[in-house]
Amino acid sequence: MNLVIPISPPGEPLFRQIYHGLRDAVLAGKLRSGERLPSTRELAEQLQVSRTVVLLAYDQLLAEGYIAGRRGAGTYVTDALNLRAVQERTHSTRFRMSRYGKLVEQTAAELGATDRRPRPLRYDFIYGRSNIDLFPFEAWRRMLLRSARKAPVHELDYGAAAGSPELQEAIAAHLKRSRGVVCDASQVLIVNGSAQALDLIIRVLVEAEDSVAIEDPGYRGIREGLRAARARVRSVPVDHEGIVPSKIPAEARMVFVTPSHQFPTGAVLPLSRRLELLDWAKRNRAVIVEDDYDGEFRYGGQALESLQGLDREGRVLYLGTFSRTVFPALRIGYLIAPRSLMPALMAAKWLCDRHTSTLEQQTLAEFLTSGMYERHLRRLRRSNVARRDALLDSVEDIFGDEVTVTGQGAGAHIVLWPMRRIDEAAVIARAAARGVGIYGVSGHYVSKPLRPGLILGFSRLREAEIREGVRRLKGVLEV
Image (cartoon, rainbow, N blue to C red; front, side, top):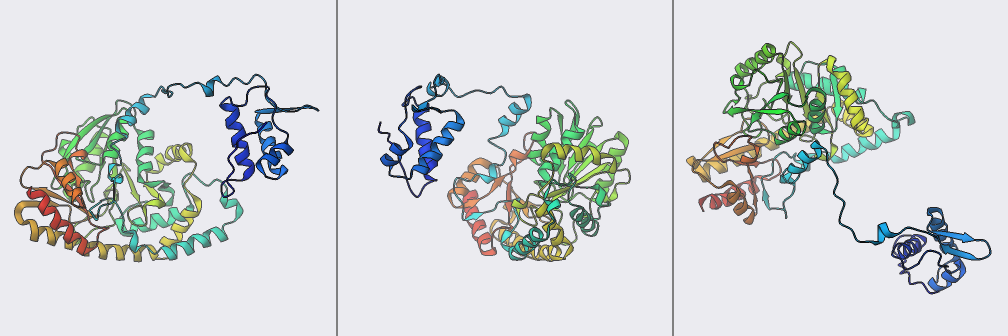
């Protein structure tokens, strides 16, 4: 018997290529049940390979049940193989989804849409990104290598769900200094980015049909997470000072807020509203979730310390991430919670993924405690200020009073609000055709948007690129 089995020396190991060739022939019915195969010597001669290579392939097929040996009679395809299931063409299986699966499937095409440009744009004002060009990767690599070298073997076993004690201590100390957060290491839960923190909060504290308030407009990930949990989402309007506490429904059990730099409008919640928000939570025995997604970036003294630092009843859960200040692929964030909630949150974290990567936690702890993180933050802030100023100056020079701007006091993006009515989607498409990436506000609203707006991030563009991008945008908005 002559078997045609393509062999490519640069490919995978030869025995695997022979194994796959014979296996595919059996599954396709080219080698039928009970049919005799060539001896290992014969097949080796046909394929011009070592007999040992063929023996390895036959051993694998034998172990998996495709072939069987008969004493003194050779090797045969196993009798009575029922191959109908793999040979007959059928329609793709349709799975019965849970309610959660159906809900998240509906939003799958829209969530994370800013990551899926069909082609890179020369002047992309993408938001929610750090300037990774400024990150000291060489120093980070040395720290990571040192962590790997000095780690005892027992530390490479499963770690604590709450996270590395060294990193918990370092985060607690940093947040006390930089954001006025009141906590100790025992209240710090290390998570895989702020997205996991939000997911754990919803899993632990939200029941189906619970009334939960969110900012409108606001971060869509929160909204969809709550809908997937079958919560009753209550939208609360946002104005030039952020969320309006007097509009939060009394029946809401929880409210999600971004007080340091409201997403997406960029408003900074003033002290009077922060106190009003805390009073609402006290009166209604509710919970406040403070998402401080880019609280490290504040300019001109306009931003206030954390809302959590004003809380005296343990009603505020505070979360943040290093994705905006270190690099997104690190996927390390933190959740600061009252001690009474920590056992449930740690158990939920354990059920989700056991713990966050140990070596990266140890490296980040050293990065924080060595002072390198704060030096890096100072570089990022100086860079952001220069790029923000270039953007604001360009907008003022080119657009004048044709637009208004919000969000310039903190964070790494602003929102451009054209004074005349525009078709947001059409403007975004025309801008992309001219190599300019801009992003709409409308998709972040629960209710109908009062007016269209354009989000412009500035951390990843150089000053000259920002000016040219705004110049091109002028031509787009004039059409």
